[in-house]
Length: 91
Length: 239
Image (cartoon, rainbow over all chains, first blue to last red; front, side, top):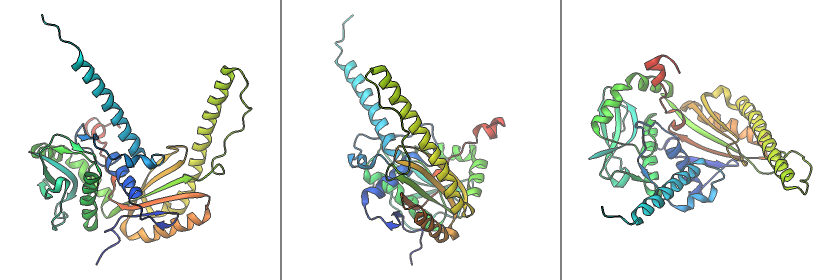
């Protein structure tokens, strides 16, 4: 027999929401932005984050967090490739 | 081999059922000084944030929540076994205090979203003059006043929501005016036994303010009440 705690329920305007994306956004909001942090650094990679998350970014800061990480990563990648492309001079 | 950690439970509370975690790995229980840490083996150095992994992380914690109230870890916690044991040893007292505060509870989330201009009225300002400097200042003033108006409305709604569910909740974490549309995001910690009552109160509240859009989700593990911020308090006696 299932208990009310077996299933996550999201309601919008009082009606249960079946939309997978909304449920996913709420889940993202929780697992990426909240929860106990045991180490100084969270070791995540957002290279293959699904851009469908961006659809409702007005609601959830998890997307903002992900975007921020993506932006930083893009800047780091640009810097890295700029360094790689710099011709090395022989001494 | 690193371990991917999902959540803590009090000893003996970890579910006995077989759980599958990130990457299809079997979830197992690591016991340490009266606590259990649910972990699975993980071979890479970073955890990709994708739909599959996020849902796997959440699913393990939701399954545990069906049995007991876990202390959920944020997505992406990789550690060695010794590191986890050291953490439990160093934070034993804080972990115990945290479990004392969340035992038997669940988290519910309420987001109040503006559906139109009637909720947060924009301030009336004169139309910008032709001069670019004046137009810039008028626009800035409009932004600042708009933000203040939203915050004031969020404060009013916080009090109003508290009047409806305040006696049912143990703790609340409130975020006001996160975005122009999202006026209020409230996380409520409540005893499992009052969940249906809480939902009924929210339903009544919703009927009172039909102009607001309610997004309610839960029950969740107490993600918003999980962090331990006791380092300064416990070690140096200040917060």
